[in-house]
Length: 213
Image 1: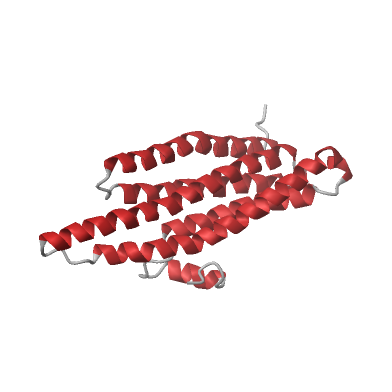
Image 2: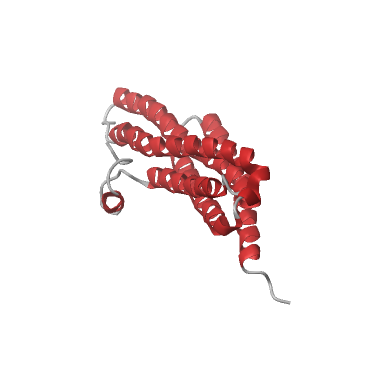
């Protein structure tokens, strides 16, 4: 499908069109990739600076992990579109007879499960990214601290966006036990990492714009 390799203006145009892909999941993966890329930039700008020699090894390790997460999140842009196609087809399956209804329901369960797995993976990768972003905000170059704050904001948006793609798919699942497991995991990640993103943002803001008095 090539959504991760087309020019930005084409991606945005596609996103704003009536085409079902790319959609919210792919956009969330992209925003997450942008978030960890900003964190990666802070690491790059810290490495090699005498002032930050004590955290050089930390930043080198962080840079390597961040680069991997960038690539993984970009890949998930494509995967989100790939799992949507069979889901859209399943919704269009005939259901005039009992046999057709049963077949449609079985197919729906399979494709809904796959459609949940991708945004869940986006959430997991974004949470790993936030862990790294928190470290760059704490240890990285003060000259690039605003980028660490931006990274946290982007990652939070990606996390929340991907969660909605989980919830919209679990809503249609007949297997309520499986749906509940997905929902519980999504809830858990939101509850832990949205506050972390907010804390990073507030920490960065306070360093850039200290409260008067």
